[in-house]
Length: 140
Image (cartoon, rainbow, N blue to C red; front, side, top):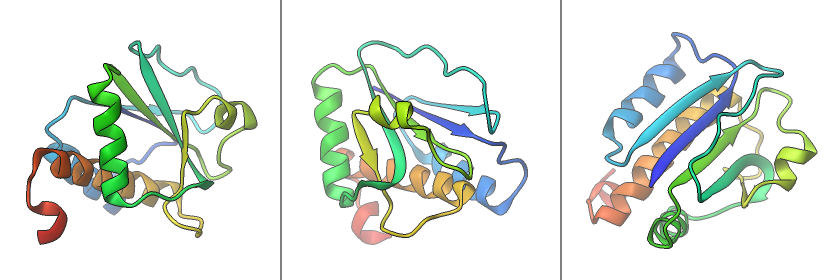
């Protein structure tokens, strides 16, 4: 299953970009990353069947193990792509939230969108490591 991170805003050359790239290089699953402008722009066409996860402060909080189990279940059910939408500073519009298979939050706090991108990449690496039986989850 391909993991596709679709983020609004340019991460540029920043400490957050370096951290996100470090985790992206470690993910063994197919991975695509798309940056869109802060406003406008079209979402790329998904592989089908797909799932869409919208990162939103009002979303569900999952443990790393539960997040890994969900990705594993989707993969095992034949989902070809899971898309992760990260909004700009103003978040997502209602249509994006309504179209999500999962609203996901990294806790009750509001995180800067560049930091949330790095956090997502780490959680994707952690989830795929859990599914592969790699010791990173408890060794890191």
